[in-house]
Length: 254
Image 1 (cartoon, rainbow, N blue to C red):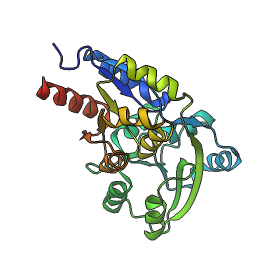
Image 2 (tube, one colour):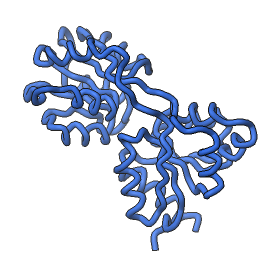
Image 3 (tube, rainbow, N blue to C red):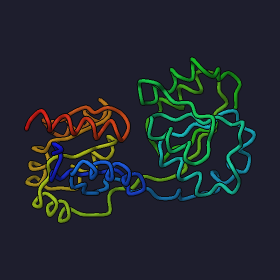
Image 4 (cartoon, rainbow, N blue to C red):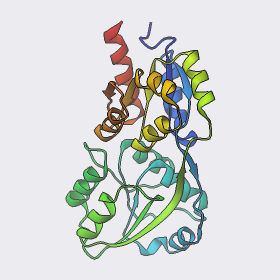
């Protein structure tokens, strides 16, 4: 029997990105509870995105910061992705999503799945000096990637393809899920960790701090520790890597 059989695992990704991970967890016998800590919404002003997509063929490289950026672009894209235009993405989940959407030339880091890793991969595969680069991301976010692209000589166009909003549910829903049982929480972004703890009072906060968390990046683990969480396991990358790590964790403690 799977080590996850009957265990309730929270999947806190946005709704648009949660299904695959939840399905994989459920194939192991886990009860996957979708509790999105980020909501993805269209940009307040879509005109800059529409204008960039209208001249997509003029760019030498498109950079997507997340699967949400890919989905936001392809929702509005009226024609097939230009075959000659490579897309650079941060992690294996985004790489898989890009290929599903019909992008054939995908650049992704082989090891470090973050902005720094992508910049290192671009250094090795695609000189950026004097190239026209389109960066598609959410509103705000880290500046490591845009600054790194400009520092490498790219002519950069940065577009907010979507907005990240706080979760739609309230503390009462969270308490109800805690009362139903929680064996582990998968947190996929530092911002999600901040939302989780900002929406609750002291009593619920203590309950959340005592839970077992799984995070695919050290930066997310650090954000959880800053919220007073004591138990964080760093997972492998990608959906299968996360599920494998969660399974191995509970197999060890049985």
